[in-house]
Amino acid sequence: MSTSELHALIDLLDDPDEGVYRHVHDILMGRGPEVLSLLQRPVEEVARGAVHADRIEALMAGLRSAEAVRRMRAWIEGGARDLFEGWLAVEGGLRPELDVAGNRGLFERLCRDVWLECNEGLTALEQVLVLNHVLFAVREVRIVPVLPVELHQGLPEGLLRTGSGNAHGVSMLYAACAQRLGFPLYPLAGADPLLLGWFDGGSEILFAVHPSRRGTVFAPGDLVEFGVTGPVRPMAPADTLVALISSLQWMQEHHGKSADAQCLHTLVKEFSRVAR
Picture 1 (cartoon, one colour):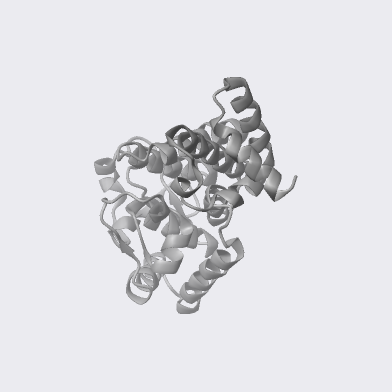
Picture 2 (cartoon, one colour; picture 1 turned 45 degrees about the vertical axis):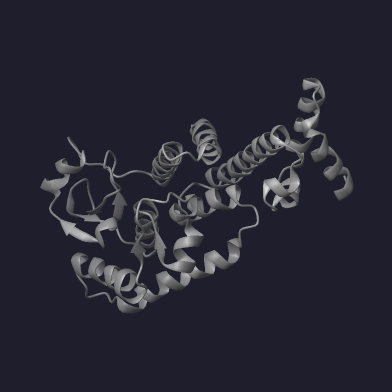
């Protein structure tokens, strides 16, 4: 389908006939990222009124959700092992124009910088201190204020290119980097905010780490203060991503970002389905 034909269909989204609207909407949904690439301009520059604007925004949210689900399904079918790749797939689906290769390269350079500072003689705690040093002293990664709420602050590109993000994003970057380096440092089930535990070859943890407090290290006995009760267990990468997306959805929903919240809600629902 040509670009002019797609533009003509977008123009028909404000047709008063509900049957026509649904038919056009379904055709455009089937074209996926091809349509999203035509809708990068602000909606108010494209729409011909309030109804048209609302329908374009609904279409964009649906297209982003569908693309994110497609990329997440590919990640799951590939084994769902690498946390960063899953996180990148989420943003790549929500923003099809994302420079995936460029962001992957930035992340790999970050991990390499940490690796170069480590050696085989370091203790578990010393390795965490190296990671903290590179992230928070050398790279100067910082947590931005809660307001204003911006979705990109919890996703890879903003953090990798600006060094700043919300607490959820910083914690995900920390966890993804630790995993890529081979540290037995895993996100903990039931913790809010995201905490990591250093597992030493079994089910017991040596210590816990609070990424959004600049990698503060504390004793396992203090985990109860963060909602972790009973046996401490690590979360799989897929579960970690669902927790992140759910947190981002809550933030968007409670600060008036209904379109982003709906997109993330759809992603959580579909992701939970395809992950089973």
